[in-house]
Amino acid sequence: MPLARCSWLFVALGCLVSPVWADDPGAPADNKESAEAAAPAADVQDLIRQLDADDFAERSAAGDALAKHGIKFFYHTHGYEFQPYGSENLFDLLMAETKPEFVTFEMDVYWVVHGGQNPVNLFAKYNDRFALVHLKDMKIGTPVNLLTGSSDVKNDVAMGTGQINYRRILPAAAKAGVKWYFIEDESPTSEQQIPQSVRYLKQVTW
Image 1 (cartoon, rainbow, N blue to C red):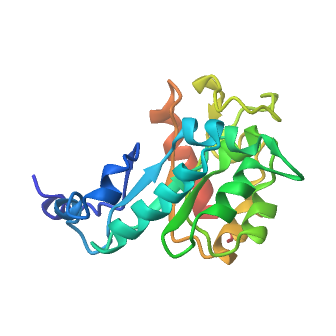
Image 2 (image 1 turned 60 degrees about the vertical axis):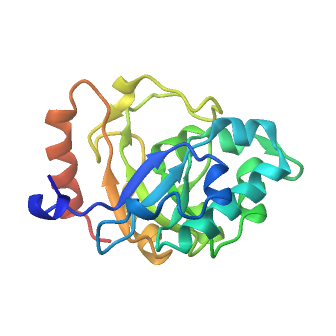
């Protein structure tokens, strides 16, 4: 059934990115079916770990090819990007080596905190590069400063009940120009927790 008939708006599609998109500009042409172009999310762990300069170039090339079809390319953070690299980290390298006009970013707040980073500082440092965010809270006592990109899904808790300070993060996201906010809850009790998160967002000023 077409999304429009369901009154749904297709905003983003998460997928691994193949260099074929850079070689075949016509490949994604049939994927655009809404007022807002779909934005393929590149959550590519191997890209970060291998540090192949050609891969960074391919991501910009893919973004260029997709832009010709009105589709935005973005990268979804998952925590392992914050491994040290020189005086900064691999995420800083990813930002530096991709072109803003072709590659934008989705901050998963949970994974940024899990990786030992401060979302407020990242929004300030890379203002205008984040267009989307994933919102979920972290169970109090969950270890952070880890670079695994992995955590028990039971550590996902309703927003406002965990250890992530969304009262500071949400205004910073708005100031940085974030347009789309997605509640993401993969816990076994997500059906009970998501309504709590919605209520929290309704009562927070940002």
